Image 1 (cartoon, rainbow, N blue to C red):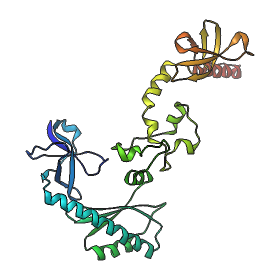
Image 2 (cartoon, rainbow, N blue to C red; image 1 turned 90 degrees about the vertical axis):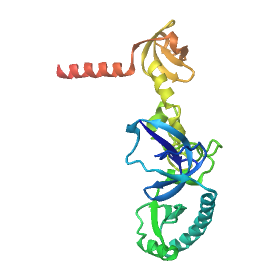
Image 3 (cartoon, rainbow, N blue to C red; image 1 turned 180 degrees about the horizontal axis):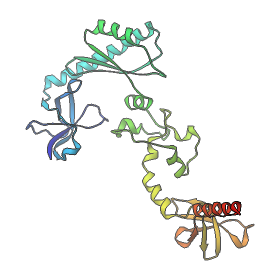
Image 4 (tube, rainbow, N blue to C red; image 1 turned 90 degrees about the horizontal axis):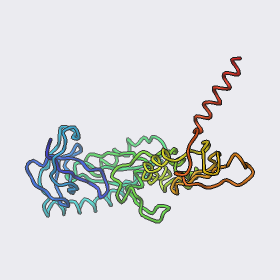
Length: 288
């Protein structure tokens, strides 16, 4: 076990662990810390806490001090510089006719480096741009290409639900999202309906996935043969959230399917079992 403090550098960002070096800081305090890219100012998202050694990426960098009033003034001055640097970089990009979109600019606390975040469809040769920027700002320059999800997180905006982007309000890290989730949740596979403003699959597909996976396990699947109080039949539709299934009764296939509570039906054979049995029977016929 080791004592750590959790620091965030953005309002909605990953929490990084630091060695408090014997200091006691409260949640919401600002602290000056040593990072891989230099000295930074972040806010305490998690106060002093004991965590397992296996959760720590060593060597653990330390907290230099609790941020002073002067430190916070430096942070505000850097924000003004970032806006100026953004405008300058935009002009330089236009001068070099580069196919890239500038998204954000970030100064390190000690001004030892300026980071320019951009998006682009492919690789961009920005070596001359870096030289120009270094000549203007007289410090280390780093251009970092990011994805469209990161761009949305930085810029923020409103989703199709009418609420602010999840990624820019509370999602610390992006979770993997797949088209399989949309299928299992019975959603339209139309890209415009399941994609966020960033053009990628909506992060919120992940939120209910565990519940859908559980419901899929305890609900008869479409194509299953089931027994009901009205006779045997085949499941033709499933309403997962309602816990109901529509069954086409074998005794009257011309009639409309009947809706049953999933607890009132007994699965005799699943769709997969039927297909496996049909395949086996087909193979046996071919062998004969």
